[in-house]
Image (cartoon, rainbow, N blue to C red; front, side):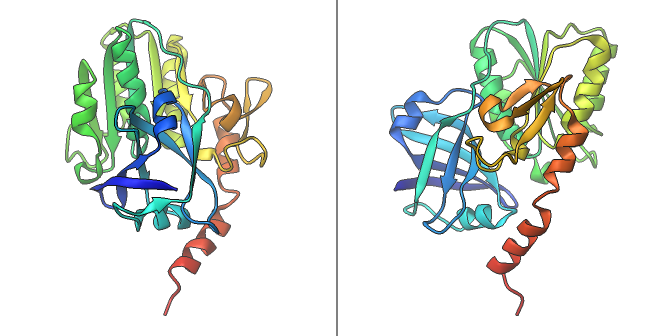
Length: 275
């Protein structure tokens, strides 16, 4: 059992949770994830390991309560515990001194890109971070991203904070201004990552996309995260979760993401039955 030691609501239905897991906390690296099970009869599902404190023996998780399992997780509080927590899983982010690294996080993807931006900064890179959300009310981890970045740029759909528009627009402005960018790392909605790749491809800017949104089982056994990268079939959970964004077939990926939509809807309805 894994004790919950801290819990905060960062924005509506988005929670930060710290969990006691000393062995995983000692080994966790940027880009990796864990598989959770809230209770014995619950499903297994992956969450990115946002941070860890080896001294405290804790892991930091950030999640949005949108499906049955994450809603169940969101109902737990300090003093409760998780039934299972397995990790760290997935290949860690390749960290080295590239030069100027632009880290782009959209929505809950901000939590996933945070440990990458932090590790890139610690490796001696100049880090520009672009974070985005529909509005300032649901923008998360702003202070944390600012603390680990040389420059933080914000985009909101409604213009309530920062640039009114999308992170692709901010990135395009940087390129048009002649800024030298050595690497782009992006995590967030699949459609956002697709368009980020579309912006960087004509300029031959190396771009890495973390495909967390499609993972299901996390062990490579279910096949639910099968994707095409270049001319090869890959499994996000064991071969990734990070891939060359210019080679990912995002249209196929988005189509595959629709596979469990009806099942997920039924699961949520079973958790909150109509009276």
